[in-house]
Length: 457
Ligand code: PLP
Image (cartoon, rainbow, N blue to C red; front, side, top):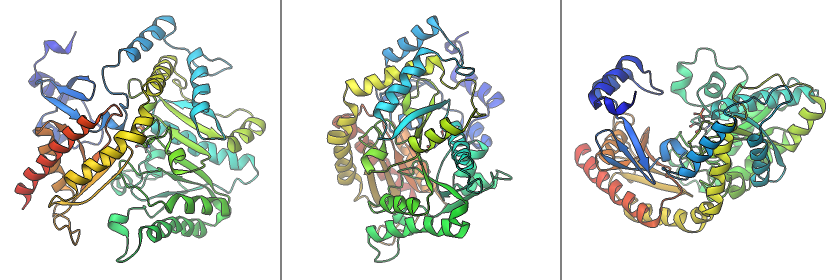
């Protein structure tokens, strides 16, 4: 049975009847009708009505090498024919996770050489949480269990992921969160800096809120701090340069481990393999997923630093944790082929030296001066556009994010897929974007902003 035998209307009806979507109000969805994406090529996606959309979100922050990569399909096909599945429990492995682990150790920051696989970022954050608590127990400090995270953070949708995250709406539906997780301030200068406060001072103040949380909990009880180098789903919140050095100083001072969540920033997005490298962060764990396979297969990898790994290996005995699909041979084959494309095509260097700076220049020149734009910020190929009613005071439009939805809907109607989070528009395109793709995106977004302004004023 193929989907081509069904009309769009039939697919929408079946979807409405049976399919529960992630992060979706289903009454709204049924009223609007599901948008069915049927194919994609390079930087474009196509819906069932044949509309072409420039994909400003790389799927969901993941399709870094763009769509239509036959090498990845062939890597999956070849592996499926040879060995579709075997597990990595019980002293077994298969070749592709072995080779992928070596590759990840080669590209990871210094001192990070071990890998534990899952199928999603959420799973790998669960693994990270268990691993840091296990580490401290093995070190004879079982009371060190508390994790400090931040408000607005997104660390996934499992119970542990949602508890680690700092999304108030998610917490409101969570029932009992995982105990022992506290939340400090987000490094979000656009809304949280004080009048006259420099960017540097704001960064230090935001980091010190983590120190306050550690002191309140008692450093002897704190296992780790977890953070995305750049908060992604929370609105591409890029911390000031002073933030991460101060966080590292604080973690070292109180002997608190540093868990970095690079599910979005990993594999080239900021112009380095990992943001840890572009931002000079020395983490104990790095959660990665998404662009590890450019989304062609579900796969996540928790990269584990020497400090934790040596204790767990030397003193830990069996680690009672693992997933059926940990180290899935097909997903790992696709990851190897994907990393090879990133390397061969020099996509990271391109983001660092060419498209990243051009993306910033283009969005700044074309969009920052717009009447309903309060700020444009970018890092690598990741960007945010703050929608405001008043540029000077940064007053928002009424409706708590409704204005950004108006912008998004105009953008989509004009061939540009981007995302609205609260009052912030988000961009995270495939790394294959060229200068001309960036120009095309800036044109389409500028038009959407004009149309939105006419609606909103
Ligand atoms: N961590 C971060 C920073 C993310 O952005 C996401 C997903 O967007 C996750 C974790 C969860 O990953 P997954 O949806 O694969 O479980």
